[in-house]
Amino acid sequence: MTIRNSRLAMHHLRTKIAAPAFVAALAFGASVAQAEVTVTTGSGYIPMVKALVAAYQTETGAKVGTAFGGNIGQMLAQTASGSGVNVVVSDRASLAKFKMLDKQEVVLGTTPIVLIWRKGLTLSAPEDLAKAEIERIAYPDPKAAVYGRATEDFLKTSGLGAKLEGKTNIVSAVPQVTAYIAKGEMDAGFVNRLAAKAQKAKLGGSLEITDRHQPIVMTARPVEGAAKADDVRAFLDWLSGESAKKILRENGID
Image (spheres, helix red, strand yellow):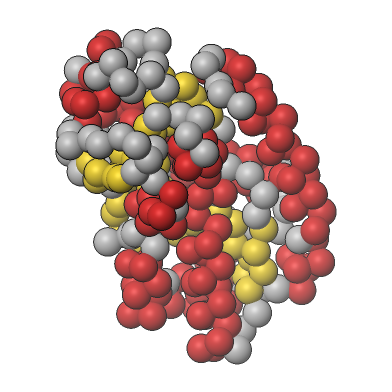
């Protein structure tokens, strides 16, 4: 299916994602109840958080629960409603407006936005998006995903936004962008480094964009008051160590 309209894309993808998010909230109830630490993140960083949790449990023997199912906005809404989550991993900007989170944070690193394109195309710079052969460009919903906000920031700062009018399509999250481009239903799009790496074999190519947008700083923040618990504090401290940094680098976080 080819999506040519941003509003249609959003309606279609939000409908698809609502059910998994609800199921996830139910499925992780037991895990939350049994674990002293329960972590959530948005859909684009689930593999990274799973790897961090697995390594921490192997090294320490401690139990860590997880709660996944939607973009970071959806997961934070569940957290605010009392899902049992006490640690949130996401970018600093996305977490800044949520008052239920503690002000302290663990800085995990920074990461760029990445321009990807379908097989059959060759791009050498973002400016190539203005070429006639590029008709459909996707990026994540800026209301829910930092990579969407960074993309809009880049398009405005670079002056490309005006040149691409009528070409851009907003979709739900990073995984949807890569899926559409891998299938050839979109010509190009903006994602994160992890998604570009994971889908490399299905793409025509990629280009990292490190300037002309606000830096994306990945952090881990506890829910307010949660860091007083020894288990939560221990997990947050571990995230600053070498074992965690190795996993973060493997997942595109410098």
